[in-house]
Amino acid sequence: MNPLIELKIQPSLFRLVLCLACFGLVPLAEAVLPPPDGAYPGGNTAEGQNALLSLTTGGFNTAVGFLSLRTNAIGQFNTALGAGTLLANIADQNTATGAGALLSNTTGTENTANGAFALFSNTEGGVNTANGVFALFNNTTGIGNTANGWDALSGNPSGINTTALGVAAGQLQTTGDGNVYIGANMVGVAGESNACYIRSIFNQTSTSGIPVLINSSNKLGTTTSSKRFKEEIKSMDKASQRSGFCAETRHVSLQERPGSLRASRSLAWLLRTWKR
Image (cartoon, rainbow, N blue to C red; front, side, top):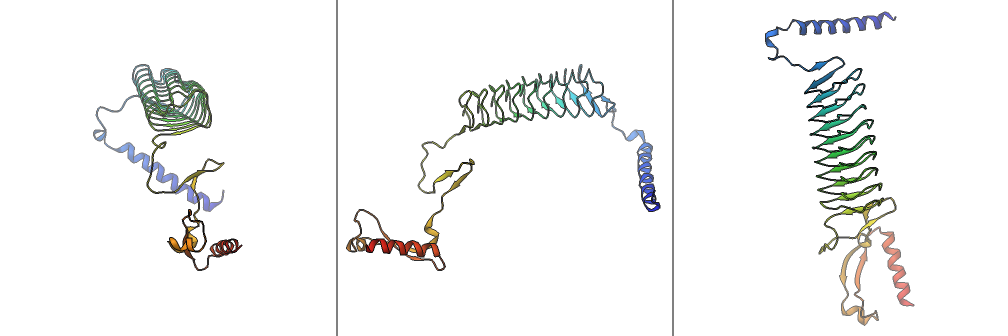
């Protein structure tokens, strides 16, 4: 080994050993009383009747509550807080908070369930997020769904990549993919795909504003107005009628904004057309 590298490693190891020795010499009287329990090899923690009962080689799991992570043997990095949370789980990186959350999960990974019975029926579905009581309750194999709100997406068993925000949002969705439900009781239609529901938009009027457009990439935007190329815009009133313009059309006079090539061309075209 390079002598310089060896010299750098040795002091680091010495400091590490010294720190561990110092922790070992801390007086026992300063420790919390009673001392923490429920800690097991492999970075696992279990509190509650039959919590993590079947653990073998799984590591860094936390189970707090009756039957939490009861079946888990080799799964890792799971967190279960509440009675029956992740009871059937044998997979990795799931988080369940609330009685019965992710209770049926077996091989689904990277799920997050916050709320009693959230993702209750999930077995193999992965990368789902459910926040709220009964959120994604019937999901079994659906992947990549997000439900925020009581009973949100509760009827979805296998649909994927769907988002629901609000009480009972997407409640009627079953097998469709790529849907968006925003607002309370935007329940949707069973089996539809790529649909978007947003509450409190239809039949709402506004005294001002600009139109909203949607392009083929599902991006919302607004149209570009030519007003930015003009200045001193004002009504011509009767002057337009004397000039021979159609009386039923409201005409305005304007001056092109300096440096505006677009405005100059548009105005020139208008004048040529009218003279004809």
